[in-house]
Structure formats: C-alpha cells, structure tokens
Image (cartoon, rainbow, N blue to C red; front, top):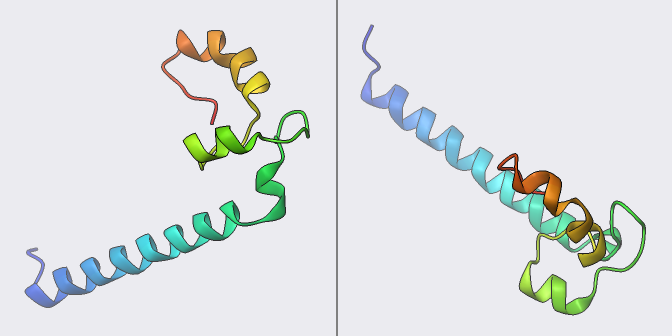
Amino acid sequence: MRASKRDLELAEELVEREREAAIARASAELNQPGSKTCRDCGGPIEPKRRAALPSARTCIECATAVRPFFAGNGGSHD
C-alpha cells in the first residue's frame, strides 16, 4: 500500500511536533536548578564546563573518572 501525499504531510507534521516538544523538554531541563549539579556526585558543575558543554550532566571529575571505561566502548558519559 502506498502512502498518500496527505498521509506523508501528516507524518511530517507529527515528527516536527515531536521534535519541537523534545527541544522544549531539553531546554527546560537545562534551565532547572539541578542542571548545575553533577548527577553522579552531587557537586557543582563548573560554569566553564557548562559554557563549553551546556548539556553536561556531570562535573569534570566524574566525567574524567569514567572516560577510560567509555573510551573502549564507543559510548559517552554526558
């Protein structure tokens, strides 16, 4: 079954609304007081780190501590 032009338009609208909602959630999360606090140790995330990586959820000490683990697995801590 082939999708109609209207079906494709509706799907694109849905994707765009979901994208906008995800951006709004992420933006709100970044502005919450807890976003300045490391999720691992509870210490502060330094302003320089937040400026360089606004999405950071850990302080540099915690991020550095797990970096060797993730370096071999292709993952990321933040």
